Image 1 (tube, one colour):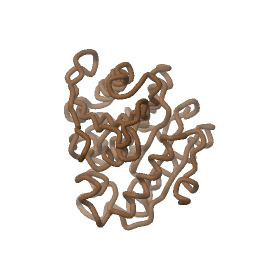
Image 2 (cartoon, helix red, strand yellow):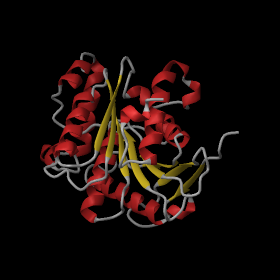
Image 3 (cartoon, rainbow, N blue to C red):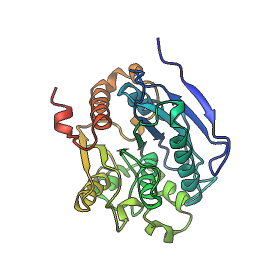
Image 4 (spheres, rainbow, N blue to C red):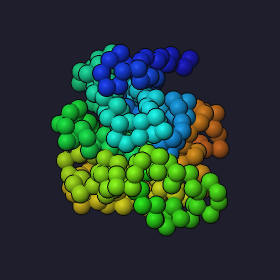
Length: 280
């Protein structure tokens, strides 16, 4: 029997009216970690249902997942949308005993555009000194508005490739905002003092090169950072959204791998090692 998912709307504050979907932890532990999860969609598309695959995997890995239906860029471009999402994160942290315990560790997690927002939240939380985050989980994250990497250029052979450029244009509104560290975290001048990161990409991922560059910069700054590159073909980032994991037998290999990484990282982010997590 599947755990019952519930939905709630934030009643007040800067995130008033934002809808959250709660996925109970598969092991129902009191004090299980809480994963604040953001779906993909190139900033301009997507919904709670688009984040179903990753949200379910996080819950199966032991987290209580709070998936966020955040305002899209066409409604609230940067920085307004990010401010609202940060308000939602603060509300979830202050109300974490509704789904966990006071001791529950809080992680931010996101795929594609959601990975950008999760990385930005880690920076905002450091600068605001609240809430204390235990880690950030970034899958195929959009981190560089320059759109100049080899992996992204290789993916733009077809008409669909322009969607990332259009997403960035809509999110930023103007080119000068591309240099803001919260908008494009890869360009941030200061990456020290933020929550440790698990960054997941794949060989055929258009965002692979910027994901690898971000991990390298985090390590240079002394921030704990780990990367896993999944063998291709995966069809990421599009394949990261959609149906429940159990209904996707063709993707069973990478789904199980990523689920193991989630579980090990959330259990002990300070001592996490991808190789150790997958050794069994």
